[in-house]
Image 1: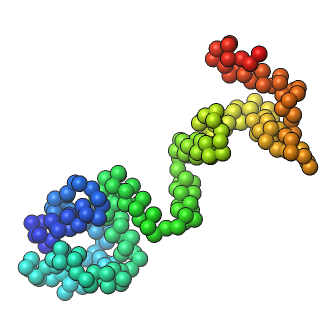
Image 2: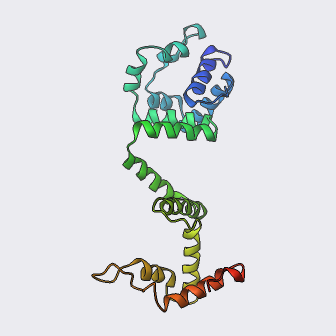
Image 3: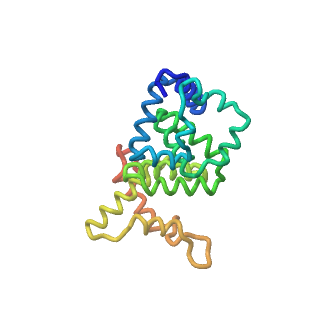
Length: 229
């Protein structure tokens, strides 16, 4: 099918409508993308025919007899065709759409698909899997944002925005110096209750908490007037 055939212009219009972008590709550009994608995926025409469930009779003939994209997309039989699309074919189509659209549009497509077809638990599983594949910098950035969201939700107003990254750095530094994980243990002293009582392991109203508080405030202040007297 020639690059100038209306099929490719209709396909470009379809991609624009499905992706929600204002940009419309040229028909020749869509055709080239299809050719490149198929050439990478299939070694022979026979393999492509098997993969898409078509035969030479499906697409043989001159341009006048070729498939009219706009009519096909608006056909009431389209839903029936989609029902018979294999999982592999559906994935291939989604891959092609993602390859043809810019980053913001991909995010828009994924967000709308996830809201419509996935429940909360499925979304959480996807997020978890994505985070496991992320690099350290992305994990730290995401960890800080998630922690801050949790802190805000429970009413913490001291803005511990970088706590995940900061606490991990402190733990690693203590470990390298052969020290115990005092970051975690201090949190345990304040955050855990004594057995059978609703009071922290370390009393907050008497020593040594006051000494620890003063020392910590002293070493983290940027101005001497910030130190609690």
